Length: 106
Image 1 (cartoon, helix red, strand yellow):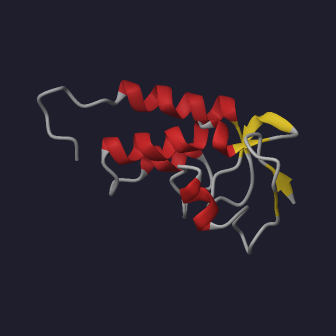
Image 2: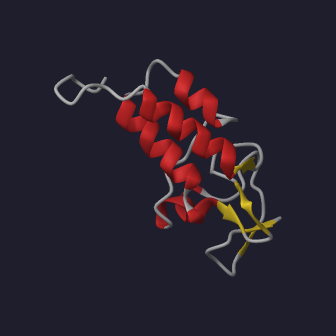
């Protein structure tokens, strides 16, 4: 059981997912199915820069925060919460890998 910081609703885990896809999409959170840690998003060669940013931004979002410990983020599709600091570090690394403005983002 977990309670997200932006909701009074308590979510029961469904399988390996902390809450339903419908709930996540209603909250504007992009699922991170298949990723257990933010660094795995960075390493995925099939995602574009923009897709990586979208996933990591959803992970960092308050919509993914645990109410009882807002320093943790639990994104749909992950097995458990991850410290916000680790998500922010991945976003910083992604910024360092940002493509040039005139280059295609793929």
